Length: 591
Image (cartoon, rainbow, N blue to C red):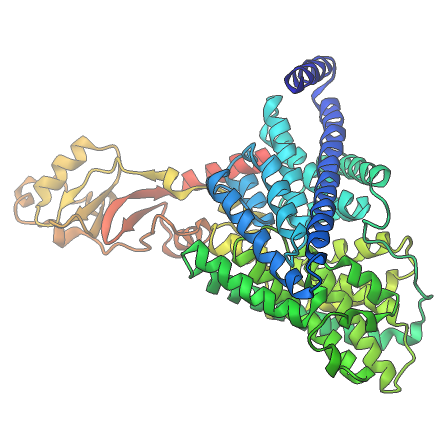
């Protein structure tokens, strides 16, 4: 039955493709990809809700909150088993992998990514893992867009646009926020944006949000309708909150990265799951709001009912006044990153988008509550709770526009636009001053050797240096004479000759222009050695070196060919003209 439906849809879309121009079919495809990605996000939400209700009802039968604290380790263990035995450890996580697929894999994503993130993140979060669902939604949407484009033989540019359309629709469906979905795709996914991408992105995001609006209830979505009017008198407090959000974002990024590296050092997956489970269990006993996505606790906080959040905590009996409650809520903003990093590091699947909103909400509430308790206000605590979420999103993902418009959309209006802009801007300025790259951009740069700082660096990092190495240069021996060089010249069309020793190490270069005046003096053929006429090699290149630094070496040495050396062994040469030709090809592809 399913195969017949698939064949019918395939034939129908093939028919439509034959009747439309390429641009028209791209617009048509963006609708289908947006609807599909939105539906995938809805299915994921339903799975998480169903799993969560089922396991919590089961845990309730034991009449003890301690059972709840053990649920995340079960979810992580199931996720690890699924990834290992079903997916064969092929799951790619995070937006960095999507950007890498665009740059290095011609925007091709494996088919299993269309369902893998839904299955694994549903189990992880449904059992209480302290991560967000938005990153899996983005990965799923991107995979849907990529595989759709591959099915209908679309070119690289069209594949990239539809991949971004899927990611955009995923965010749009998660929050019923189409503008934020478009901006997320532009700020985070598409390192190189052209005007032709905007219309498909808008249509896909609107389609994803529409599915979410029709199917999901508002209680499932993160929505707010309570906000007090903006008062310009509070601008200094918003500035302070923005600066504070920047520093908390830096803390989040450094802490998450540090824990991630520590967890990766544990090669045994069983030990890693057990370690993560023990840490999560301890955190949940102390801080129950860390269970799951945490969106319900954010709603509770925004309704100024912070006292309800200490229920079932081991610390509940010790929290006897408002000051101690404030410390408890403030600590949640700092321990959330630990819970998130441990959940992902021990094998669970999820992202940092939801946790960023969680941290922002608790930071904003704690800050405004402190100001009011010190008698420096009054300032609206619910407004500060909301705008701080934009500040943390901006600081962690380096995406201020996404943060601003996401909060504007989920609050149902633009009444907080000015404070949102203030907090997001100051947060961004702080993090960029201390750390020019976001967590994902740093991962791209260090692990995946891809730069997204600017368009030139991005296009250069897409190129593969190993594909440009030429090994058709005639080699001469270090112990040879001018006669040997003349023989080499007669066999070569090049004007550069690498000089190698017995260990195949590059010890020098002979340039034909430098020996042209003696090469026809036959009486010197056996008197002049290669060592007499060779030059010391300048600007030797390593095969894994970035093309940005390679081009700098070309400029510094004023050469058009530079030698490539690996482990002290001669490999070949790279030509500056080859790099520029490849760069021009990539530039034309992106237009």
